[in-house]
Amino acid sequence: MSSSKTEIREIIQPLLTARKLLRDEFTKLHEKVLDLVREDEVCRRLTTIPGVGPVVALT
View 1: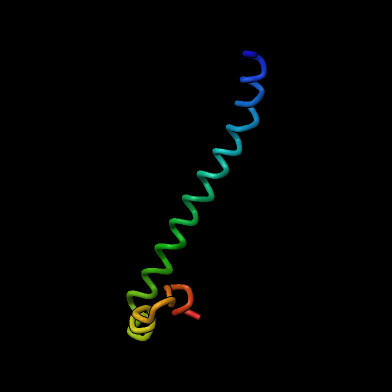
View 2 (view 1 turned 90 degrees about the horizontal axis):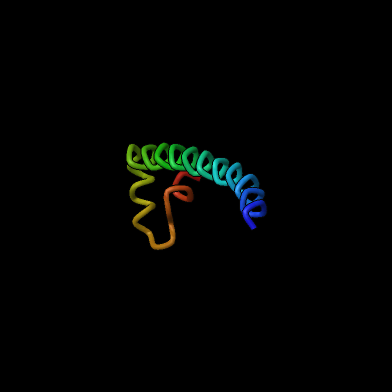
């Protein structure tokens, strides 16, 4: 049993590390998108429309 837990840990740990890196990068990029929207009056207005978020407002 202990051996199988070690094997699972060896598989899962790199996946968790990669997930954390991706989430950290996503958070940085998301903040940049939000900053762009905050700085643009038209984008800010567009986001007041239901269903229009920052990404749609930028496109």
